[in-house]
Image 1 (tube, rainbow, N blue to C red):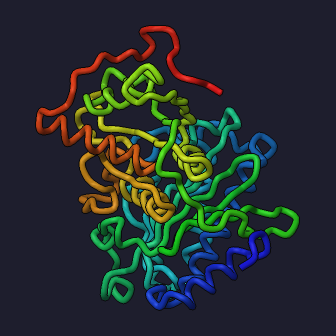
Image 2 (image 1 turned 90 degrees about the horizontal axis):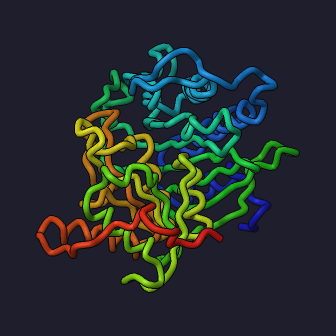
Image 3 (image 1 turned 60 degrees about the vertical axis):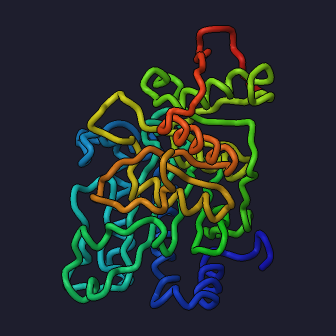
Length: 360
């Protein structure tokens, strides 16, 4: 395939021919998802011109205020994907229960899970946002009967495909169907996503990490230890300086890691003891874990690989640590050492002294 000349539909058809596990109308389903992302990209790009900024005056199932574009993006996925006959049901971060394909429509052999607009707090300040999606096989008899939420509760290792769209200076689609991770850029002149970043690879080492440092006092000891060592820079045990980044959009954070390496942490904390983590397993953690793993990286909760977690509910939340393999493995080791009492004492320098990390 020639980089920049292969559109996403041709790529998907070739992948389906190569992989017999991609049964039925898989490539057609992915085309419906691509159309959803194009529609959302148009809405995001118009913003105030189409009166699409600001609050929608409603809340999602998580109790979070919805933006107008949250609602538009959710509707775009439902509208473009419900009629093609490729799905049995859908589940969205914005909806309490699943969305079964109406009985009058043909039902297919797949399930679609999606976060229609990740990072929506960035919408009104014109920063990058995105959409995240995951495709699962429908369990036996699921498509012929009435799909239920239980049908969706599959570990991330069983995902057929995962991807995200990034709505930034250019609109990009990054996806994996189990054969590497590949990036496509939307050519607005012809309305096509073209392959521009084939076989993305995350370097195993990095000098960059992303975390919301304002929550430092709530982090578990292993995460405090890791960040403390990074901030100590060349004078510390790591012997090198680190950059710290935070965009507050998981899509943007993961995309930066795919482009140049790094590690992203949204760890377990004690801020709200009713939540073991902040990010949704089905809508965010699982698809991003597949994308990162297929690019040679690693995704973990700190204690186990995200792709091995057995979901207990549609809206379950988990801690997320992902990116360059060596860094994620180090953080996992710190968790193991803490659990066994083998970790080392440390002093957190976070914002207590002059800046100890580079920002170049």
